[in-house]
Image (cartoon, rainbow, N blue to C red; front, side):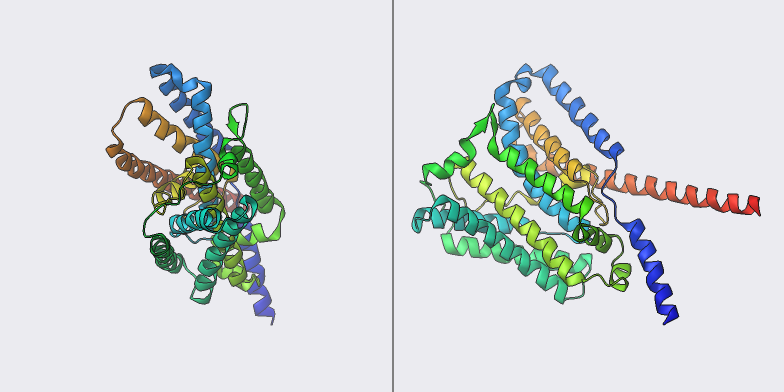
Length: 351
């Protein structure tokens, strides 16, 4: 009994060191990156600083940030979600079906979309929790479920989009304040809610603890299956909201929606300071990472770069994000080693 208490005490000590919600230095770094890139584009094209372009950027940032925050939550737990695009596509076409075929009210269609996203997330989390949890398990399960969701989407629609969406639904993206769409403010509210969850609630702490040290989390009595289910439900809800944003913005429920979500869903949080290995997230950094990605896309348009190079740029951004994550971890590890060595030397001196 005493030995078990000692093990749990050591596990609790490890968990206290595992969770991290990012640092100010990381946020400042991404802000500098955004400002430098923006200044460079503005020098070449003054229209970059126009009100119309800022409105376009705010639309793109709104959806990118929603997708990225969903992936950020999953990364924080030490897992990954490859089904985010499949969930978005399914939610989009189901919203289109509800509005066009079944004549649902807009509010009911939006609620249905979020529920479908949450259900997809629940399935992901439940399956991963029932199997032996690991990053590899999450990778394979969400790869399978993402393909399943995409297949259901194509099977239900025959790859034919739903057009002629109700005017009130399109208004979800048309309404703006000072040129900034209302969905941008919704995104900020959700980001603030996520920050509160990680900073002030036990479920946020448990999410990071699971990602930081799964074995210690288990020894401390954290219900891993419950944390995984909640984590993936949140991810599914955010993917569903992003799908609603996209569908309202483009005025059609496209079965191919979400096919290009996977890379930016990883790039934005990692650039913003979220650890690919789990245990550390940055909500503010993730939103800023989405701003950076939107800025890169905008730069390609202003520089008249062929759309065929977009995939190349996406790959380069992912490599940059992974390299940044590795460098951060090495710096952090070096700092911890130096601090431990210094503490050890002090003990020897004082003895």
